[in-house]
Length: 341
Image (tube, rainbow, N blue to C red; front, top):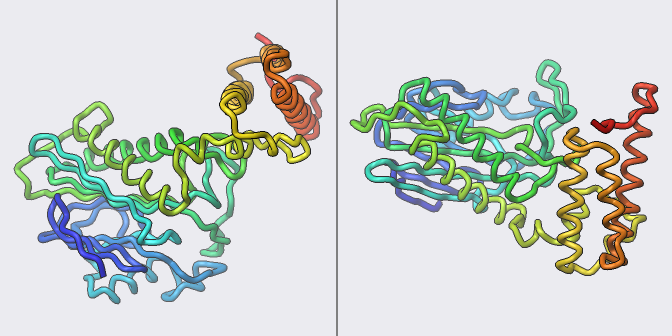
């Protein structure tokens, strides 16, 4: 088992199944877990990898998620009522770690991250409906353990979770990770979890953890660094891969029949695909109208941009027609998705 001293106090131990962080004295933790979730004076927190497939929560040892995590705590000699933990399918050795310090303020983050199967954008169609604990799980979760040596009130802890969540979403935006359902920019996965702990015995009192505070800044920078590390290790997601022609075509959801997937990975192709993605997204969000979209497609057909420009324009015209047809089938209208202003 690997061992590491935490800069904010305590010790981290990790093996193939779990990351466990034990504190020298109880810390105030705010957890999104079903096991001792909410506010808790925690002696330890953990992130655990589920290495078995279940069809419903009742298939878990213990019969439900909370009791299963309680069993994990017992297996590691942790007090059940003084512990909270998260569950994931990500590998523990692919964790990201980062710490940031400003003067006497320190923030520390350990993250595991998987997004290949269930990256989603807020508002996407649901993947499951929970019915008395029955569901169909999908792999992929961003779990964040965050710590600070500062003393925070309950409200400040809750504000910190907002900053942590915004930072996670910023990572997905910066890496251009798309929803597997709608191919729009992802904001997380459907199973993400956060545990944030502070030191209530510390003389360093912070009353704000929003993104414009120094604590919020450190939280965001540290979360972003740790999540990016984990995504690179777990999913091989990094800027170089995400900027390639192949990944750009996936994000635009271009059909294989367009033959664009055989395009060499050139600077011109990446640039045109970047513009195409931005224009298409703005059209779907209602920021530009259909006429403006078609004006862009005509620009793609300029002689200097051939042959790739015309192929991309043809593919985007096909996407537009398919989208408009879907809307007609849904509501019986024949109008544009977003008429001109």
